[in-house]
Length: 281
Length: 294
Image 1 (tube, chains in turn brown, purple):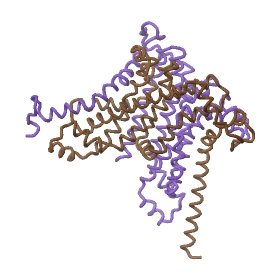
Image 2: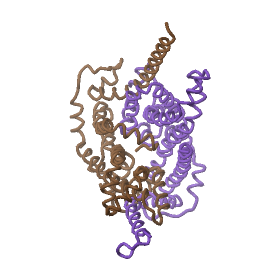
Image 3: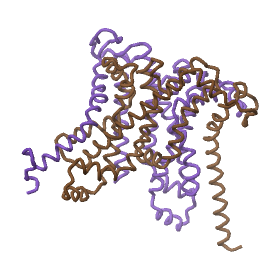
Image 4: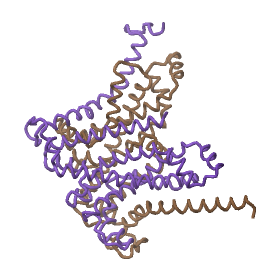
């Protein structure tokens, strides 16, 4: 056996070991997800069967329809969608504008205003939730879309992200466009925005995900059943049907479905933005 | 001079530009002033008052803070939060570094496993919490598979570790991706040189990878710690902070104090302490990032 062949074999062996190790980790992560999927279509007895039923003996798709008719989930999904779409839109617009302003303009107060953005980026929501609740109450925003939407309509993270990205747009390009007679608004709309499309797409997905998954602020600001978002609706449902595990899992899956679809489509951008910023949602 | 040229309405071009800059940033910054900066000041003010949400807050100086210094529940919450931070950060770092090294060893596998490992981090926390809540039941899948009979969420000594395990499961892929970026930044020449000197893989990891990836590891520890400080949904949904105060984290205690017991002053004082700790952590985080850049 030549030396070349034996290193090749060693390489193959190592590949196998790496694969095996990753498969073990992958399995540990995948099992709870797979279990959720099958348990949403089994029976409450099936969930706790010994030995564990890894393949459901029969499919109970009616878990979904029964859960949907037991609580106004249509309403919850509508509320979450409205809040998510509006928050994403306002975040994109304000982040793009402010990111551009901070990246490419000199003006008095620029440093201190950017410190405001950095603080907003760092402050955990839990540290300001009480005054925000008091403020929302004073403004009469409890149990309203305004209460759910407005306090989160602008994101320090979004502004920071767009500033980082737009700093990379070459100044020479902007100057050339100005010399060609572009005014500042045209410059922003026709040159800066199209160049920032990938960053805006990543920001849009992250913002929508964070809004869709948000629990604490809706919990504080919304009690009225008409205004509940999906995560609150699920928790409320669990409160009334505590032992109806299959239906809890069925609505949980439905709540996760839009997230999973977005993730599958935008996976690369989501992972890259998370990894580079160290900020999740 | 271009800067001195007049361009309509008596403004120089430079002045016009700085006006535009200001106009671009204000729609973003003004809401942040109202919904972040003002509440920070407001939290500080409320922390000096006694208020039950009715009437006007009564100013009482540092009383909330002095009471907190001897408040057993608050101390317990700080301890639980710290335990949770360390108990998730250290195992997460070890496991995530392992996964990152595996990814790095065979880059072609990354595209298979990375999407799967990362998925739990993007799912709604309410969903993952409810799923684990059912898995953790006495007759649930975890006890069933492992042949155990542990009261995961209701046993004083198991409840916090149970929350740690599900948090590690949630964030493992997320931390691995961050660490992988750090591992990949290490120049290949270092490994080549060491290999020529006869170093094997374990020696390479110990003497090259580990020391050079340390800033990224610290970064992950900081993120895991801030996650612990804001941990709320899992204890709120699965243990209500119990049994006893075994899983009552700082954030959970703030929520309870404010919205169950309506003790706004005391809750605000705790919020402000949370804010101070977070700002210190953020400062460390930025310094780590900065040192990584240069």
